[in-house]
Image (cartoon, rainbow, N blue to C red):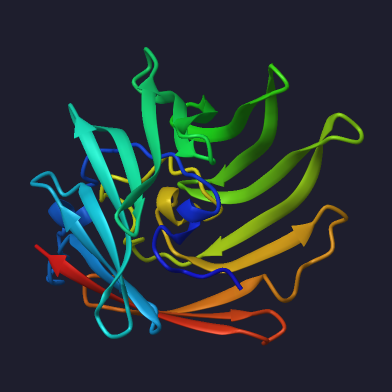
Length: 276
């Protein structure tokens, strides 16, 4: 089952981020006697065997994520985020004190990112290794393509397409370039079901356009079910998960329990916050 360790995916598949303004909810429209809900910002993600601490700037945008082992020792990996005019301009991933990768963002006239340039050292020095190209429908990210140079030709190596149900991602479809057929071939599809509570990964500077294999960064609510199918449509019982949540008084999850469909794996994540 996929680990929920924050930003661990960067090590296996580089990601794209941008920022959004602090989200407002119905706090100002509370016309009854219910307590006013606070806005909470996640500061610790504890997976049991390791945990991550998040640091913010004055605009409540994440600027640093540092990973630790279960004993509280830094494991040597961290991610730094840099902003300009309220939008993320660069992220850097570090491993054992060495810069592992860098992503630099380019924004189009719409104000949304149209590309992100990926830099890494693949054995011959730090250099550009690929470009993410984004497509939007309205405010929703609907397609991401990874372009790389192959034998002197720019090649779309990977493509992910997104559909939405309201403000939540409903499905993702992943395609990879097949060097046998010379076409993009479907690799997997994922479909999601959600609760009605607040997603803690929204409104912290990394939401809306986070390109990774997890939709938690650009869905308003928390996924209660993730069904993964392979290219033939067969459900992957050992990868698909059901998630159950415990919540604080402000409707943010404090504990997530993820169990695969076949019961072969269970993961528990504890989340803590600063609320105001």
